[in-house]
Image (cartoon, rainbow, N blue to C red):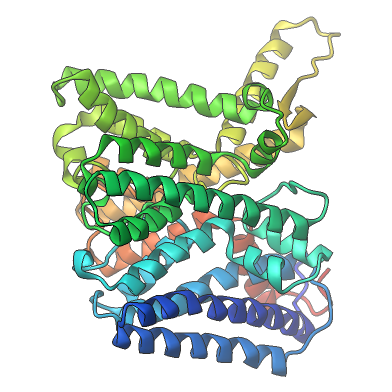
Length: 505
């Protein structure tokens, strides 16, 4: 029987949500400063009001629901899932005020897409958006890729057990360093160093391609934020196609791959343990999957003579596949080309790549290569067990930063998340079919939303049905948090309504 959460439980949840809301409000100073620097006075007012509102709303629960208790598992996971919804609602305010969105719902769609690093967008007239709006759109991706909770863990919270529970709630099961606060700060240090190097590289490439220096710098910063954090937003409506630059595409491919690697693997590489890249089950599974799916993509595109040369197949086919598999969503083709030119086989390869996703404890979405690798390892183990003599004991292990025994709990956990993602992919597809979209397009768009990718066949636009917009928002939210914290939140609400009286543990 479920125990009904107490008032003290809700006080604790409200208090920590308030702290995270204040942190989010403080971050709004970045687009505010951008607006002031470029004399975008209307946008400056929008961001100033949004910042004040966020800080005010964050301070209220801290004042009226002051709590010194550490969080238990249900509280920590509930705080995480609610915080992402609060971030969406607050992040959407300056977007809605900008005049680039048909409704507040559309702005919420883009805010959730940004924080969840999905990349699907409903913005209108993007090519004429203010610098500050583009700064906020891409900053949301940078923050969402690291994790909203990570902001609070890094600057506002102690290294307690409750902090670790919120960290896990953001679909990060691994601690790179023994202390979760130190882990959070390491992730920020890595990201900021890459931010500097990536922005400089993209600025130089853009400038050499003929883009003015200041514009090249801003585009380089924004493209890095969306690329390394596997988001997919871009400052132009044509996305990466706008640049018509092979060097630009190559740099963004490197950023996408770096962004999809496990932060624990980054830590190993930073400590010069380069062999880890080749021994690690997750990286091996990821690269094998990329190669296999690209071969299928090449076959599909070649049969239809979609592109005239191997270079064109690489620039278009491999780029889209890497973008899909890393969960980034950058595109150097038009969305409609997927359904009109690519054919079913190549399109299926991209859908599978999106569904598989990148690495665990990275900025990517989807099922994750580690879970796919564990599932394949367990399948091989079961085959060996069946073929072995009855008295034989079959023990399997794999290498992921360290040697890990293949236990039933790992297999069960991986298989559960795999099934939940597949159910979510098909649930969104059914909603798309309900609204009259063709199966392949509906399946593609649903997988892109739930796996936080951002590639599109053209379904995602301001005129699509409201029900589909809400469906994709829910998919992006659940997919980014990998279900568990969302289920815990629903369980807490259900227990409050129906559970027995008592203190939750």
